[in-house]
Image (cartoon, rainbow, N blue to C red; front, side, top):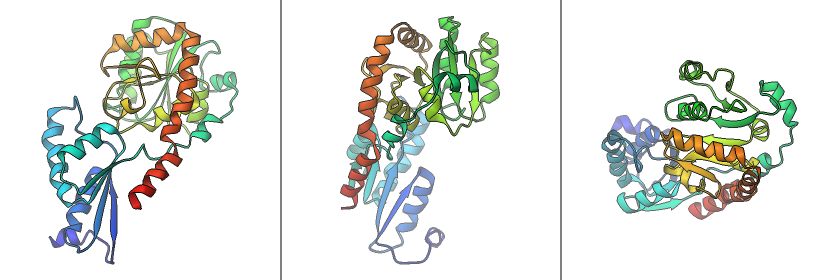
Length: 297
């Protein structure tokens, strides 16, 4: 008990608001030792969700359910997590907040010379560019899109990934194995993601799990049609046939078909683009602040 208490900086608190699973577990255990302190926890995406591995349910779910006893308020950023926390946990209260605050105007108003940006990152002027943004790891599942490109066999389509991570060499090797090394571009970490979005045609987001997925929302604000997984927080904003297309994250054929449809139909891309720019407002920082005022009110 004293070990947990020592994790708290000495002082008098009325409220402690904690984030991320491991840190929040420690904080909530520590706060059991303090009197008259409210504990709020923002879950940025539970690791247990519809379709998650059973090991996640046997570990993360059971721990989160137990710790909810010591939580006055759980804040979730997607609706699946909200419904589960509300009906299965023992927290005093559960609230939904639409993400962590997207600066819609920042991305919507980016101006870039499309051809110049493509030249800078080594993309042909007439290429059809599919973009992903995220760490090169197992969860982001970029391999599905590379395999989809191989299915399409369309030399005009290029796949660009902004992000660094442990699977860099694996993804490069996969592209080489499939004869796509000239069409898959691993750009590493970028500080100009918005500009790369504006130079692209479609945003692909094949993640296995996402609490929400800010990079996809940023792409929507830039006006890109989406081709995404149909899992977890992603489905809060990615709607099949409305924002673009959704597929099972391991459905290579589905991703290939969806990218192929968007390649062939400029009017369809324009329709999705216009919808997405407007729909991104639902996840704006103004909406998030409105939710926070309600939570703290």
